[in-house]
Length: 88
Image 1 (cartoon, rainbow, N blue to C red):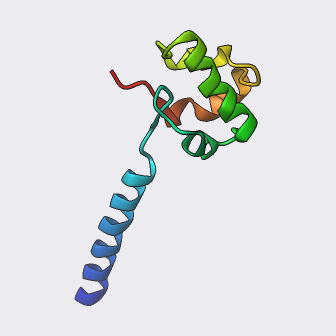
Image 2 (cartoon, rainbow, N blue to C red; image 1 turned 90 degrees about the horizontal axis):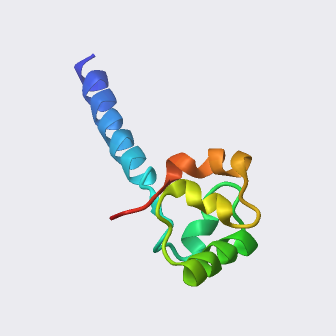
């Protein structure tokens, strides 16, 4: 019984740390095309549009500004909003 408890506890900690690392947000002002493509619903075309937009207009001021990029509407934004950030 003790072995099972120790194994379960170790498993819980390993999974917890893995999930914390997997949930790291992507900074949309510095992200590469590959990083942007890792977001749900963002392929190479939209990833390039995001980079082109920030190069033309400057850094995004708030995450909602990404909806100014062609192809990112409210629905797509809702899918990625918890996965993106703007670091100051």
